[in-house]
Image 1 (cartoon, one colour):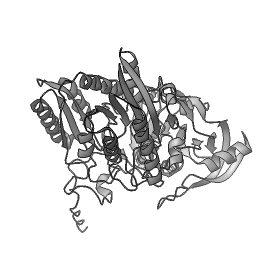
Image 2 (cartoon, rainbow, N blue to C red):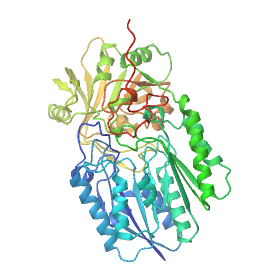
Image 3 (tube, rainbow, N blue to C red):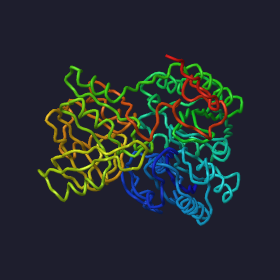
Image 4 (cartoon, rainbow, N blue to C red):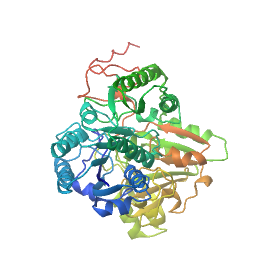
Length: 509
């Protein structure tokens, strides 16, 4: 009987974000469960599309394995993880491993883009501390997000890495199952040589959709590598909203020989470099996106993604640029979600259905240049924010978004409604609309605060998908971002300006 300790510590850190992740944020249940300890890890993640659930399902369907859960937690992406939160959670994991007694292996469900107040490489620091407890020889299998900024430290301390291969991340549980298969191989004392390389350019999340070229072809190639003795290989596209030295895409490979792992990494890196010029920049101004949506003649809704105010990438989910463009553009049959404003949600609940409120909506996160949308709103529906998700990304999980309300902008020239919640949550599931009475096929425009994840659940009902460049804390125009900590020479976007090189002055008109 092999005894495996398991733990998870998830955070995607946007160093340009407005708020920091405290210990209380990791305790909070929102779109994912709150902090889980011991047996609760197994009970509350069962059936959920999470890597740890996929790992546990694979282990329990195989004879000879005993799982020892320590903890699992996540916090909605935002700015730096506080030192207090990191030290407490890392300490709980290390103490749990130390107190577990004899274990044969360890599985960690990590993200790969955690930045703390004191550590650029949060996962690397965690793994360093864990190796201080386990020593260098214990097999440690790690699963990472597709947006991981993989570092040499992560690669060195993990015995194996498995990385999501889809964006939207519909394969999270499947990635956990792959991580179990690699750990089984390590238990069998089979050789597993590793290789790791970083790409010399950043890719915005808006260009990382694995259903579109060139990512589609890059990820398809993973299953087509014909290299003798290769065991597995993965691509991480990186998280460019983390201003750290190691931000950006990377490739990892494992083989039964070092030559096989090296060949796979070289092949995949060559493919990434060859694809650099094919990464598309699909962003439209908010005004242009609304105008195009209104001009579209089709039977289904046009979905507009508010790509730079995506809370799933650490933005505040309370900016009003796209909302303003919808009203100013006299949009009809338009609905937007999920705007985070607990104050307005509370006022609407107190006022009741049918009441009208004169209020300032959103724009309260303190970002430079961000203002609330001031106007009159009618309360059309109320919710406690608890409902089952129905899409594949959040499959098996229940939302806990706090008081939620559907508001109609009172404006004679526009027909615009807004779903307002009390906790940040990326709008990637139709249930965010349907639970409060909105049937999406009947809408003309559906605006979502998301970058790519919404596609998994919204593409089937959309006639057209547009990405809007409204202001927000998740920057997609990387050449305009003020980076300070990147490694010298890394390009700010595909074929972009190298970091450290000043942009050319504009030519006189």
